[in-house]
Figure 1 (cartoon, rainbow, N blue to C red):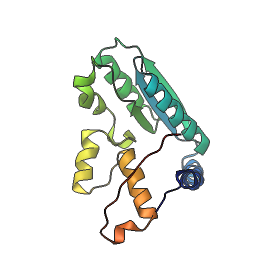
Figure 2: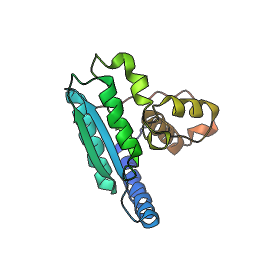
Figure 3: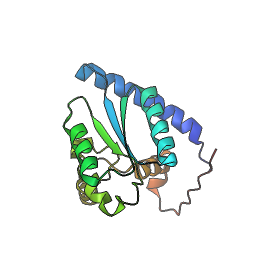
Length: 168
């Protein structure tokens, strides 16, 4: 079986646009995602740009906070707390990897994200709920892999699966 990622993504975008429209009707406003990018990270900037582009394509408003390389962990945690407590922000993402000076504190920093706003599913709270089979946000790679496997109806049978990504 060969998976057509572009076709799958197109269908997913249509589905997500409908979900956002329904959310807007219920809440009376567009959802908003906040991205935090720390330091000089060209790959991280590309990922945030791609995430913003997709979010805006489906109707999610975005805001990006870019913090300098030398910022301390408390300043990053404070920015996360501000977004987590902001009623206009529905999801918070800390773009990884963090600068080397903050990597020893990565989980501590991620754990500042309010559980209901952890859209990447990377907090300890989300991970513990995931392990228990409780409702939570799942890490994006896990969700994407699960959805691809499910689209091929591979969950009904025991199979070995190889996933190969091709850039471009």
